[in-house]
Image 1 (cartoon, rainbow, N blue to C red):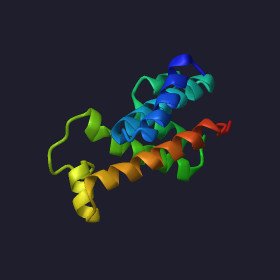
Image 2: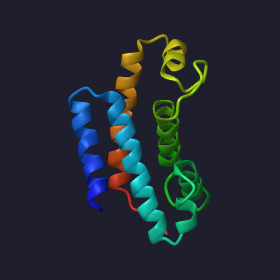
Image 3: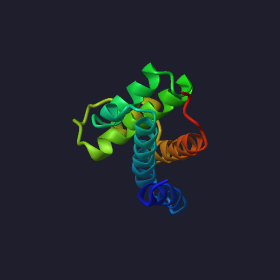
Image 4: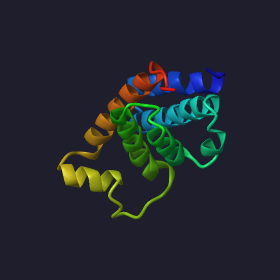
Length: 132
């Protein structure tokens, strides 16, 4: 694994320990993007890696390279991450306020659960081999 990818993995874990839950989500998603990109390139899907995380997820799904449940979790993490890295309108359904209102939960509790799930997904991907 490249050193940058390893640093993302390590800092995502540390961020969670120190209650930096948004950082955990963003770093976990960045790790997944690195990991998917490297795996897809190794399997000959270089073009698909140039179009972003959503395209890489779609490629993995279309070619059945990962279990469907794992692909769905990665895509959900991408959707949760997006409002933190790409400003969305207040009423966008993936914004933390909209999700917390929908769940009738405190936004910090929602972000904590998201961060915990992000780490679980990151570990699942890091220990999973692509199907060929």
